[in-house]
Length: 367
Image (cartoon, rainbow, N blue to C red; front, side):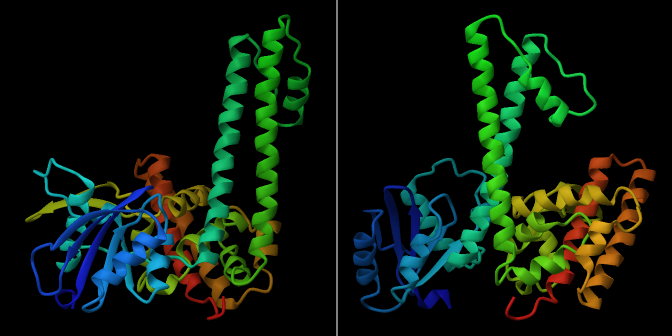
């Protein structure tokens, strides 16, 4: 079908867009140009290339987001956003420019060699941004803690309590006295940065909880929280990042989307499998990895988890209970074979993705 449609490759930057036009039925690019990255220039380009027939615009996902896709589709034209990590690259290609990249996108799309990604709706993107902002703030808190603790370590001050950053640790921090004003000011600056990060994190946690109680996230989050290790933040991250689980025909498809499947280099009768591909959604991979640690031990059903499962459909509970049994056995079996705990947890996270997909199929159409 692409042979009978004009293909417009776009290499998008903050201030400019490189354009390559591959006319319908032609194997040679007829136009290479640069336009400003603004609405007027884009509308002028669209009118010119679609004057003699429809066209499809192609660009790769990146830091400029999806507003370009929305601007083009709202004007009645087809626009495709492709996965940058899945664009073929020639080993001998040593020249890279914006114009060449735009032409490459047009040619590869005409050849059917590009993988189209699903562009989220504005509401979905907003929810995803909120969960990602919470993750960024968590990283800010970790860095603030490291700076403060390492500053104190340089002064020979180490907390000897049972657990760091608890109430006892906080009282110990407030009791620190420094001889030199510069040291006191440094300590107060590090401590203030930590407290600000903690306040932001607390506010974002509340906002995430509030968002999880609204449609269309309420039911999916409630179902996914039946899985051990999956609470509100993890469930909302799964829903916001993947959203329409029905687009994955099988559980293995969703596992591949998370980047938790094994890489492979095989030839002939030789089969070699290596580390996970990481060629997927890093945010889902992270939260699944964190949740998978909960399957190291087979403990009785906790009061908190039992409360989360109250009132959920029988099929959801059946899948969650099957996950409890299978994933714990998976972890113990791999550890018994001598696998490091991290490797075992990664394998558990991969199968946990499959159980999450199985529950996601049960979402009502309005969820």
